[in-house]
Image (tube, rainbow, N blue to C red; front, side, top):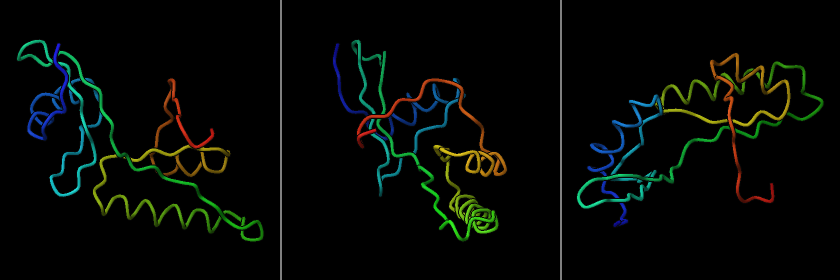
Length: 125
């Protein structure tokens, strides 16, 4: 078994089709600003496995000072951020909702709850 980092061309032709097939977001390959690295496992010339480290936009935290928490400011902040994400043609956004209010904002903007294991490493959490 041989292990090596894949080129952008290999990510595009060998990895992204599998992502599409499985309903996953395709990896963002950009020569000017790389946002992912893929470590591949090869059996001869055949790619038989891979693992990805990628930068995926993380939305949050959202904070509003207590004396401004009437729902208006948080909704406006969320709407303006959503507008930015659409204009940037982002491929996806991840957020962690730690309150019912942030859950409602996420749902209001078409985000879907992920049912499955989510793990975190680092940050003392």
